Image (tube, rainbow, N blue to C red; front, side, top):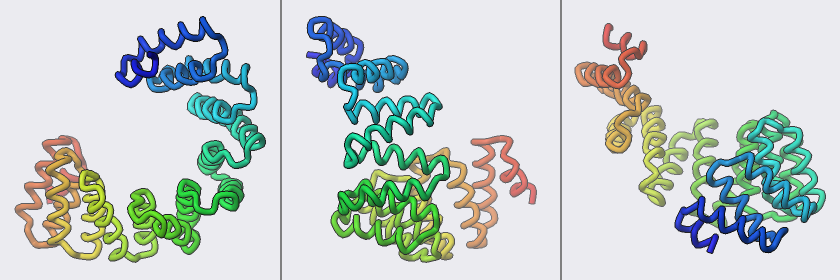
Length: 275
């Protein structure tokens, strides 16, 4: 019943049902886990943390509970405690990828790139085709400017799954950083063909086309994007730049004025209007 109520998003009733079940059968793992999940859904982080702690009292080597508690501790700005729990989970099960990825992400945030990469390489040897691990490696290599390794990791994903949008996005970012704008815009267009509703990528394509001086096509993408996101000031600025490049100062001025209607104190738009 609790699961049905949770599916219907009747969370308070689901909580009551799980709590009632635990009074009848204390230590019932499925009910405890479901209760923790509902608390997290409702962003009741203290309650969720207490629930995962309770689960660990019953099953101290539960790697999922260790990892989930670690994430909550990290959100509470306790990274050292989070690291300790991730490491404990990995020591119990070195192949538990959620713990590995959580640890890697935290180490990356702390700029400990070598430690993060070492952990990813270790688990990649165990699961060489795991797309989550390869994507994390690709992103980390990209951040550390090891572009050949980043490309290798990302292409390994796309060889198995040509429709992997996160890999395509990261690959496009790689091509932008390496100056291969034409291939980057092809990646973003591929994403749009797979997921037309992902309108944010229209802006990405427009930016690249602008850099390539393909103003006509850039304008088309921006118009479609702004129809969906009519308050995106950055997009209007890009559109105004394109109009200036196309020697259409009156239309550019109108675009800057539109920006000022959205943000009356925008100094960049005020400077453009006063020119």
